[in-house]
Amino acid sequence: MAIEQRNYDPAIMQGAQHNMVLDLGDVLDANRNEILEFDAVASAVNFFRLANSATGDAIVLSAQGDDTNVALTINSLLTGALTLDSTSTGAVNLGNSANAKAVTIGNTTGASSVAIRSGSGGTVVTSADDNALAVGANGATNPVLRVDAATSSVATGISIVGAATGTAVAVAATGSATDESISVNAKAAGTIAIGNTSTGIVSIATASSSAGMRYKRSVLASSGNTTMTSAMSGSVMLLDGAATDYLLPAVGAGDIGMEFWFVATIIATDQTITAASGDLLTGSIEVVDTAADTDVFVPDVSDDLIITLNGTTTGGKTVGSWCHLVAISATRWWVEGIFLTATETQATPFS
Image (cartoon, rainbow, N blue to C red; front, side):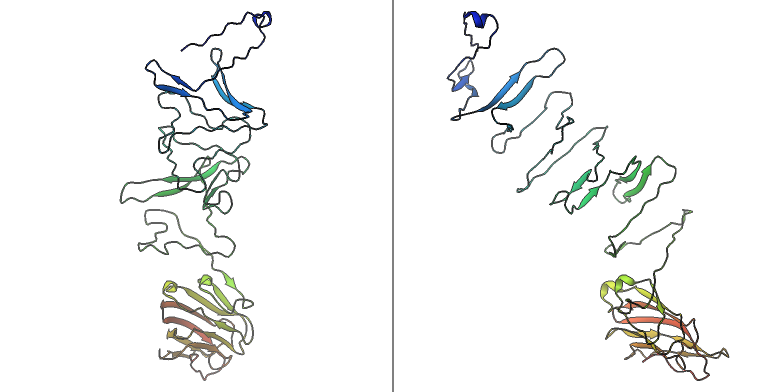
């Protein structure tokens, strides 16, 4: 189809702009089938501009108009796919200019899925922002996953390597140095749990590795810590005050295996360690006097919930008394320990 209007006005012939008014409905092809439809809007002020180009430059289709900002929308019909680049081999660029902008893929109210497929070059996200990648229902606010790439001269990161069935996924540090470390932290006093839902073995530093596991126990004074929680498991609790009474956490099914150490750092006048109701004590404690005479005391596993250092017969008269408790079931604490006393008359610390 060709539309030509000749105008011999001298000004037009000298190159002045000439607007041609057409009242178009549909443009039909040679078989009189619709190939293009024009839909006019009353009092329209915004429009398309199509600009051709010189050699090496891109053809430009842009939104123009009287409004300061004019959006551009391209829609397919209902469930039909909208495809950009189906036969070309050049790059497909979305928002790659230097201008600040947000590129949104999918919607915020309905169900959307985004599939990113790449060839041998992989999919690369380049950003130096603290929210280089933020994934979650709330965007960058409390995301499920955040990648922070804002560190100056960042050169280290995490490598995740997938594996075949039956082979472990590999998570490792990556970077330019020979040795790169990984830090894994909970937020503030939050707990780090490894293997807390899996049923397999948690293996650290396998036999074929020269690496070793290093850790430090938390050492907690009695102040503010006498009512204990399962999150304190593994700690050394200091019996560091007269009349100090520790309350062990109740043992739930998920708490089996938690343990505590108690160490006396003063001469006790009366210090107790008390289990929750129903969490009975089993095991034994040796009470040793200054002559190295030892009596071993065993709870009867019927009603004993309390361990007492009274400073005399049940131990604690000398600094260094200790005991170790491990939750071996949801109703049992296993106890071992040595209590020191200055009297030759020893008594059971269990009650």
